[in-house]
Length: 90
Image (cartoon, rainbow, N blue to C red; front, top):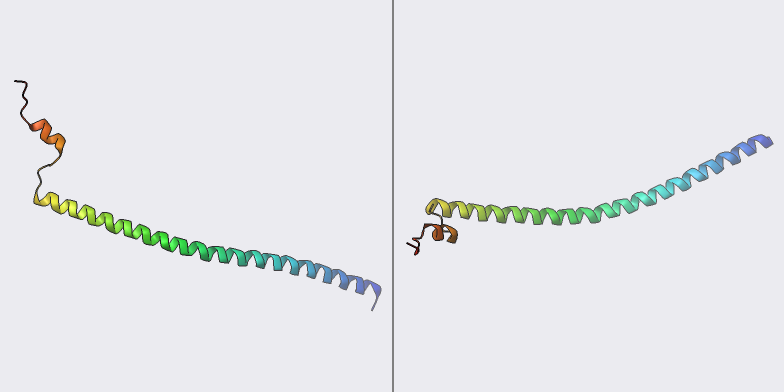
């Protein structure tokens, strides 16, 4: 083999080694990102459960309010009673 072929081969090995090092670092970053995504997906799952619970609870409250209003449609607010009460100033 000639000297130029050995130099070319050495250069190729150097480039290959640099590429493999870059690939190794990228795989380490990918692994860290996958682990972080797993943690975040668990938190997202818990958040979804909390939101679902809130929607179910609010639906129940609104449904109960609607049923109560259907049974007795007259308002029961203190402000309404005060406005409709006869005044003593006459």
